[in-house]
Length: 139
Image 1 (cartoon, helix red, strand yellow):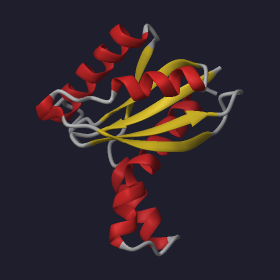
Image 2 (spheres, helix red, strand yellow):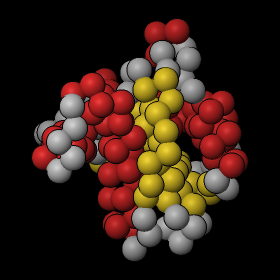
Image 3 (cartoon, one colour):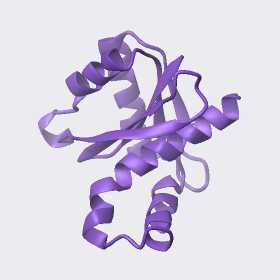
Image 4 (cartoon, helix red, strand yellow):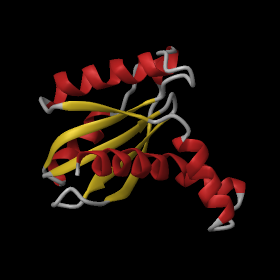
């Protein structure tokens, strides 16, 4: 069963897909969105879900450090609701506290990536980390 992982921000959505056995996550792309204009990239998410035969979607849930739900987590929950309605697929949420920080640290320390290059891949890497954490928890 393939699972899609999403790192939802206000300007982009990082996308990752699991392998067919659900063991590993690979980054696919970053979808540009505009929350203020109501452009959420749902059509592209749907295309990718169909292309990869996705059976479930995992959305990163950016809880506050004290485990409460803030405005960004509320936006992720709302995005998950839109996905359920539009794609008719089950949606689960994965605590994503610090995944973007971890992803950026990895790019700086291991790949020695410049700031401009990091900006282009950080959301995709965060989506990979969200999905991989979910897969590891499930297996």
